[in-house]
Figure 1 (cartoon, rainbow, N blue to C red):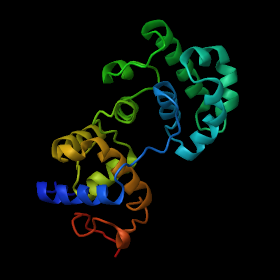
Figure 2 (spheres, one colour):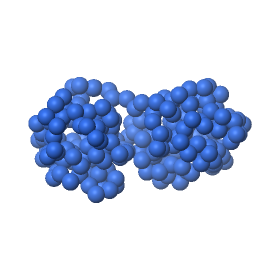
Figure 3 (cartoon, rainbow, N blue to C red):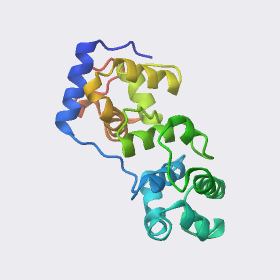
Length: 214
């Protein structure tokens, strides 16, 4: 695990990320807060591309909790059966949809605790929804961010919560809102798990990763 980068290095890193991609976007398709919750819940151990393919037609007919309940679990399964763990995920989506209808008037709550109380919604999912829909500077730490945070020194930590806190504590406030998207995209396309593309990396001169592939 790398050490923690200092403030000046952090400022320079995120200035570069911002210059390269001023408004980074999540890659999961959605049309409202509810479909975002569903998409993120479905994305566990699946690719965004695969989830988008499965939800393209689903969200045309079930873009609210009540419409999802009307579709039914078997109807949902027909749309998402190409996604891993689809039966379990279908059960979670139906349960969370019922809770949203019965306890929240069909609306998605905008607190982390309330979101995490929904079946199939963990801390990462809650943070993605808070960030992408309500623009709250929540840091959703997935495998990409965990890897980039520890390799680079941007957010070192032994578990996802520690990495989340390191990013919140050390990334300058002006960059907090988009930090998790920049880091996800960096991990997905540059700082890859097996073959990091250090030769084309924007931050290779500041990164603390000792095994750079230059």
